[in-house]
Image (cartoon, rainbow, N blue to C red):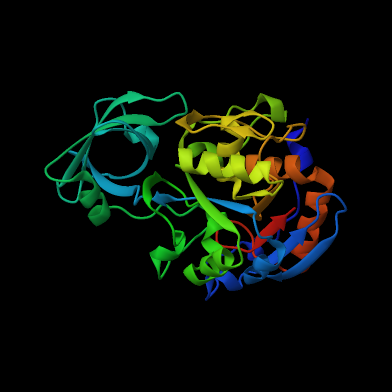
Length: 341
């Protein structure tokens, strides 16, 4: 299967640079994956497509201010560091820019010495292993010195950084938001519950794997970077009960989809667990858990677009994307949404 098969034309002006004024008033495209029928509305209309007894599963991971700017010791050269994953206390996998300036043994000072990082090794994806020394609480220092790491296609800082967090974000650890959930408001979630639709949570800390570009010619040759997840016994039980009642499990985002499918034992069967997943879902995959999907509009030739195509069919998805371009939908992380059922 060729990566080029997942390309599409996208005018740059349709890449959303800021969120809409109200989270739940982004546009919503509804795609029936069986018939290919498309409807359009606003995200708050999602309640009309959910049924009592359905289970909505959300990712409660919280984005950390993982982007740091420091000074190389002793030259003072500005170095950008992106935290990816904490291997052990004070030791992180990171990306650095410019990488050629940060060889093994190089030290970097952040916040006039409040935080010192030292490159102690290289990673197999071109990053570094960095050991940090500091006094006090690392999270508090990070909150003070770091920035939310917006995707590279968003060119300006957000006036309200909180808009790059879901309203239900709880567990720190992501370097990018699980963006399908950005459209929900507390009021919309309350209305969903009031209509008899159940809500449960998993955690998947979004890392490099979700956004690393596919550089191979064949889809099957791409290797995903592993990401950490947790699925608790309460969510596992709710999924089991939902399936037994013949109701639907609806994934809010590709991160939830990957987590649920990674822990699936067999069709409809799931168990509580935590660990690392590098599951790569592309057309031909046999879904075991999810019945419907809420997601955003994804980058051309991305693993996320491949996942959505696996769920709804490549031709139907690309046809929907062409319609979204024609109707000037807003694309990517801060853009509009799709509901696929």
